[in-house]
Structure formats: C-alpha cells, structure tokens
Amino acid sequence: MNGSLLFVLSIIILVDVVTSCPFKCLCHPNSRIVDCRNQGLAKVPSYLPAETQILLLSNNGIQKLNQRTFRGTQTLKILDLSNNSISGLLPETFRELEYLQILNLTNNFIEYVDNKTFSSLPHLRALDLSSNNISRLPRTLGNKTENITLLSLKYNHLQEVDRLLLESLPNLKTIFFKGNFWQCNCQAFGLKLWLETFLYSGGISDEIICSIPENRKGKDLLKIPYELYGTCFPTASQGHQVYWHHNSRHKGSAKHTHPSEYGGNSTHINCERKSKPRSVNLRHSVVTVAITGVVCGIICLMMLAAAIYGCAYAVITAKYHQENSYPGKEEGSHEEKEPFENSLA
Ligand SMILES: *[C@@H]1O[C@H](CO)[C@@H](O)[C@H](O)[C@H]1NC(C)=O
Ligand SMILES: *[C@@H]1O[C@H](CO)[C@@H](O)[C@H](O)[C@H]1NC(C)=O
Ligand SMILES: *[C@@H]1O[C@H](CO)[C@@H](O)[C@H](O)[C@H]1NC(C)=O
Ligand SMILES: *[C@@H]1O[C@H](CO)[C@@H](O)[C@H](O)[C@H]1NC(C)=O
Ligand SMILES: *[C@@H]1O[C@H](CO)[C@@H](O)[C@H](O)[C@H]1NC(C)=O
Ligand SMILES: *[C@@H]1O[C@H](CO)[C@@H](O)[C@H](O)[C@H]1NC(C)=O
Ligand SMILES: *[C@@H]1O[C@H](CO)[C@@H](O)[C@H](O)[C@H]1NC(C)=O
Image (cartoon, rainbow, N blue to C red; front, side, top):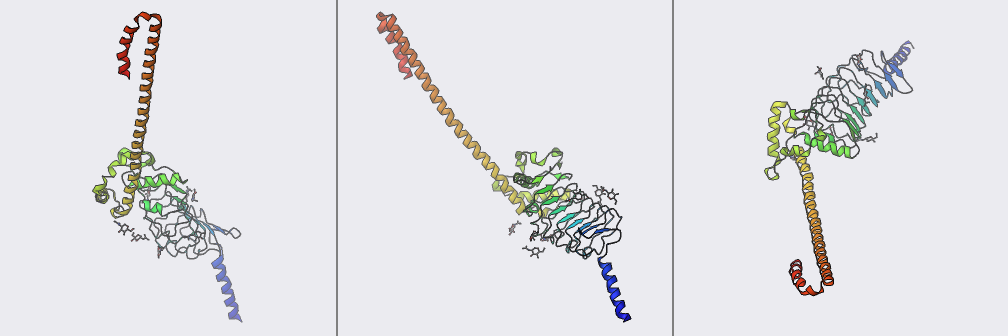
C-alpha cells in the first residue's frame, strides 16, 4: 500500500519535472512557446513542456551545443539562438530537430559550418547565420534543402561561396551577402552569374561589395563588367583546368583557401557559361554590320537614282527653254548637251 503510493507519487513528480517549465523561462502552453530570453543562461534547457514548438533563447550566454542538447526538444519548429556565444556547431548538433522550420543563429561566434550540420532538417525554411565569424562554407548544406527559402550570410568573414552551394538550394527566395570580405577575382565569376540569374528570376538579395583585390575594393560585383573577367578565360583550345589549377594553387598558399574545391567541374561550368554571352555578342555584332551594310547600299542607290533623275530633268528643262527662246541655235546647243547626257546614262 505504502510502496505503491510512493511509486505513483514519484511517477507524478517525474512527469512534472519532465514537462514543467524550465528554470528562468516563461511558458505559454496555448501557443506552445517557451521564452527564455535575456536570462543569462549558459546552456539550453534539457526538457521542455511536451509539444513545445517555439523556443526563444536569444540574448543569453550559451557557448556550446552538442548532439545531446536538443534530445528533449524534438517538436520544435522555431529555434532562436541569436545573440549567444556559440562558437562551434558539431555535425550532429541539430540532428534531432526534424520538424524545425526556422533556425536563428545570428550574432554568435560560429566560424565554420559542416556539410552535415543542417542536413537532417528537411522542413528548414529560414536559416539565419548572419553576424558570425564564418570564413568557410561547405559545398552543400545536405540533400534535404529544398524547403530553404531564406539564407542570411551577412556580416561574416566570407571571401567566397561556392556556386554549387547556391545551386543546391532550388527554392531559395532571399539571400543576404553584405558585410563580408568578398574576393572578386576569377573565382567570383560563378557567383556573379548565379546572382544575376537569381535576381532575374525574382530572387531578393543585397549587394556583394568586393574587398579584394585592391583595384576592385568597394565595387559591387554585379557592376564589374564581363570584359574585366576576360583574363579568367584563356582561349578554348588551351584547356581551362590547367589554368584554374595553377591559379587556385597560387591563391591557396597566400589566402588560406581550399584548392581542391575549385579545380575541375564547378569552374569548368563557369567557363562554359562565360563563353555563351560572348558568342551571342559576336553574332549580334555580325548581324548589325550586315544590316547596316544593306541599308547603306539601298540609300546610296536611291541617292544615285535621285541625282540622275535631277540632272536629266535639269538638262531637259534647259533644252526646252533654249528651244523656245533661241530656235535658231537649236543644233549647237544640242551638240553641247549631248556628251553630258551620255555620261550620266
Ligand atoms: C545580446 O545579449 C546581451 C546579454 O547577453 C545583451 O546585453 C545585449 O544587449 C544583446 N544584444 C542585442 C543586440 O540584443
Ligand atoms: C533572427 O533574430 C534577429 C534578432 O534576434 C532578427 O533581427 C532576425 O530577423 C531573425 N532572423 C530570422 C530569419 O528570423
Ligand atoms: C562533406 O564534406 C566532406 C569533406 O569535408 C566530404 O568528404 C563529403 O563527401 C561531403 N559530403 C557531402 C554529402 O557532400
Ligand atoms: C518540405 O516541406 C514539406 C512540408 O513542410 C514536406 O512535405 C517535404 O517533405 C519537405 N521536403 C523535404 C525534402 O523533406
Ligand atoms: C569574431 O569576429 C569579430 C570581428 O568580426 C572579432 O572581434 C572576434 O574576436 C571574433 N571572434 C572569434 C571567436 O574569432
Ligand atoms: C542524403 O544524405 C544522406 C547522408 O547525409 C545519405 O545517407 C543519403 O543517401 C543521401 N541521399 C541522397 C538521395 O543523396
Ligand atoms: C566531374 O563530375 C563528374 C560527375 O559529374 C565526375 O565523374 C568527374 O570525375 C568530375 N571531374 C572532376 C575533374 O572533378
């Protein structure tokens, strides 16, 4: 009797601990929000009330996340970790959050994102990585990224972003780039082309302002003319890959980048894309020259015809006048005009 009462009691206490509102947080059961903002928390609460969908943790002192951090919070749809002190994201950190739609990591100290970090979030729609220390992004965020519509990369330490990463986000609508150290050399050409296509098809973005090289500092990548990228594309027969490998190796030693990511296929695509607008331009100019030539020819012929007609008319008129006023000198004047008329004919 006593023992079973104790058992029931301990179950009740346990359930209560598991589902009660975490220390220092406010819980709104109806809206399924747990609000732990501005509480000086050093870690993410381990357990949340059942069915919690929104967890607000901004303006705290959270430094570390690991693969067990979100084990008790699997139903989350919105997770706001903005303005904390998170420096590293392990590949498995968010693995449990399979319903997550909005992940806000702005204003932390994240330096690197792995290709697995967000790969288990099939419903993810918005990913805010702004105001971190990210200097390197993977070539893909995983193979479940089709729901991502917003990505913010602004105010980081990025010098480049692989075009493949952007192309692997098919439903992206909004992306922010500003406040990075964009390197506007040959490598940025793929980014330029991608961004032009993205904006053309209705995407929303901000500017990519170059930091490097020195002569392009402060310039908008979209406004750098194609002609200035001419040196990036040696004549077709020389083969792009040799040139590119050489280029990235050279750069890698100086600028701490990753040569292997830039050789081969992705750059090859860039080069092929470039050659298209050029040949279209060439074709345009050929057509223009041909049309101009034809039009000029027609105008010249018309002018010649008009001149002949005018002269002939003048001659006939003059002759007519002469005949009328000096009938006696008819033969002489006829002889005078005849060579002129012949020469025009
Ligand atoms: C970030 O959080 C700290 C407290 O951890 C707070 O003092 C600061 O005002 C917050 N910054 C912003 C921009 O909200
Ligand atoms: C992330 O949080 C910041 C403030 O904490 C806010 O300004 C920003 O809009 C949020 N990002 C998204 C994608 O909701
Ligand atoms: C993730 O990156 C590692 C190297 O950083 C690579 O070996 C692996 O193939 C990548 N995985 C995917 C799915 O791209
Ligand atoms: C994208 O989201 C929809 C609805 O939230 C879901 O049905 C779909 O499976 C998601 N996409 C992927 C790749 O999981
Ligand atoms: C992150 O970058 C800021 C400047 O953008 C710098 O002050 C800070 O020391 C960096 N933090 C780390 C952990 O690298
Ligand atoms: C997606 O990635 C996971 C691991 O990240 C892998 O196991 C799976 O085979 C991939 N699926 C496809 C279709 O590439
Ligand atoms: C280019 O991609 C194809 C598959 O798409 C692959 O077989 C080939 O090895 C890649 N070449 C380079 C140089 O990376």
